[in-house]
Length: 115
Length: 116
Image (cartoon, rainbow over all chains, first blue to last red; front, side, top):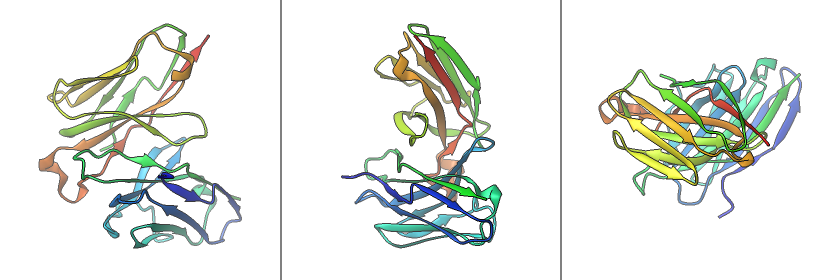
């Protein structure tokens, strides 16, 4: 398996623009997580899905952030409009509880810079 | 609900030992340890599921005290390759889970630097 695949790896945009980050989880994994990493706050969970259904979105900062998982192999995290304080590395991770343990496999991350 | 890690940073000479601590204010079901190299994604090291359980990974081991809601990561005879940021992730106990089933709360991380 190629692992969790994220795109783009780097994104530089101007304040007010829409940003869409993409994630392909590992095939067979039924949980998908979106994390944001900053120096100040560390790794924060934004939202996670189980079987394509959002389970907990309490970490989503505000209405400017939205996430979707239209099928088992694809998820998007959208920021509209973007602000400089959204600059961070966004990680997608997936796992399955079939083995009884909650072990996450992370993607390589999308580094977002909002000017 | 974020676990607290200490210390924030550690600087070692190759061959020295280090301990990284993780504590939670919530009852825990499991504790996970991940390592992140600069510019890369966090990588899973180990998971501890039972009180007092210890596990090992190369010369890295960990313990989990369920009653104290604490875990410690032990790095012995450190190698240059151990450099990175170590994160503990906590999964809350079954009673406290509810809608947070499967959710991992990560600490702020401990930056470990090993010098030759």
